[in-house]
Image (cartoon, rainbow, N blue to C red; front, top):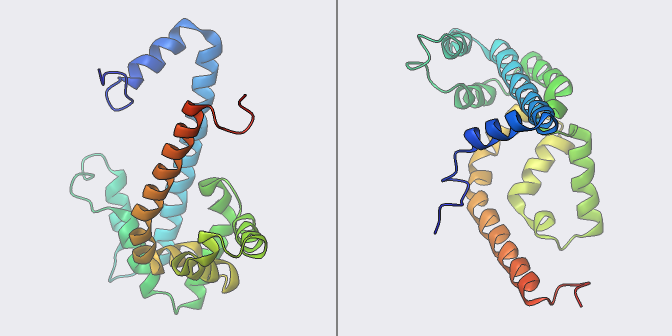
Length: 198
């Protein structure tokens, strides 16, 4: 009991064994791994270029980023993402730096998120128009972020930093609501009362 759960299974062994046994699975696993690797490389590239844009003598972002890349200095290096966000907030009034971050959004946003900034904005505007009572349309924290990113057209890194705390506070409620919806759906499916089930 409880041994067939994703946190217990050795997925590396399972996927490796499956890939070894089947050429079709091997190609599928390799393609999936390649897509994940490309996404991580895009994030790394975005962070590296953002660090260069925001680097100054005070924050030394470039140095922190370089330490994260060096195998022997990785342990002592600080996480780069919080440093990037802090620097983005500090340089928010610098039009040249914000313009460069905005340019990086045009290059990397879709590679990191799987959709363009315009697609994200359009989907939010469409939801607000078609379903104004939807919880996302009603949520002030989400709409403040959408306003920052889509209306004011600020760089995503600046909006992420500026709205990080309120959105982080919202996350547990969203997870809880999704888990509750999943439980209700599973209950419906188990009782056979779902739409289309005779």
